[in-house]
Length: 85
Image 1 (cartoon, rainbow, N blue to C red):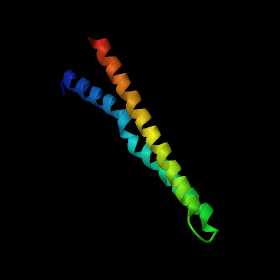
Image 2 (image 1 turned 135 degrees about the vertical axis):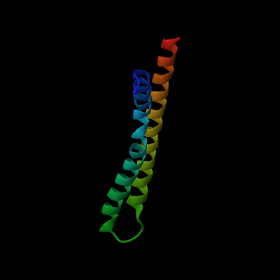
Image 3 (image 1 turned 45 degrees about the vertical axis):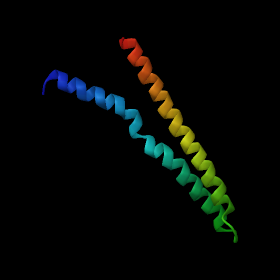
């Protein structure tokens, strides 16, 4: 492999690395909220109120974290591009 090819692959991995974790950042709070709500509601008959509340809270936290990471990485990338010019 040529040195330019290796640098190109390293650069690609470096640029994509922050985005590889986004799926987990989005899904983890949702699942944790749903599971915690289910656990609380398990002992109480009736509607799954806590499951719904904590699932919605997990969705909000998950999307906040997701968009925060995407916007932060986008700003870093734009700053690096401006520095190169």
